[in-house]
Length: 132
Image 1 (cartoon, rainbow, N blue to C red):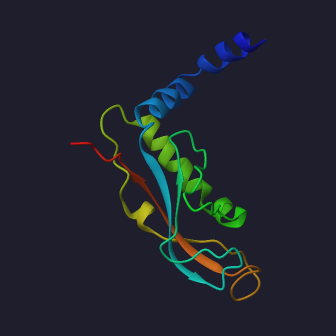
Image 2 (image 1 turned 180 degrees about the vertical axis):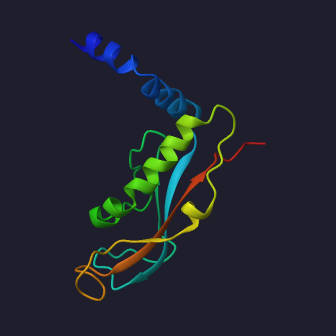
């Protein structure tokens, strides 16, 4: 039953903090920025950005370009750290620091540029633009 599932979900303080954070940061976007690109088979280039919402859902890009699954699998734990930091903050969030400034690459071991090329990525949080 959905009601039982919801009650079980909300019984966890961590989950309720995550829900409050998702609501608090609903207008913010988690941005994955490509800082460099070499022979990327998916066509990702330096300057490309991909946005996720405060729940961690990939948002559609204006130009219709999606993010490569290999890039997404390499950067997901940084996104999870930001989601955890959102849930841990009752006041304003601090999403800067050496951990977030360190670029991550998308390829695994093996070929010099991996099986599909290489991109470097950083993750940040973009606050909504205020209308005023």
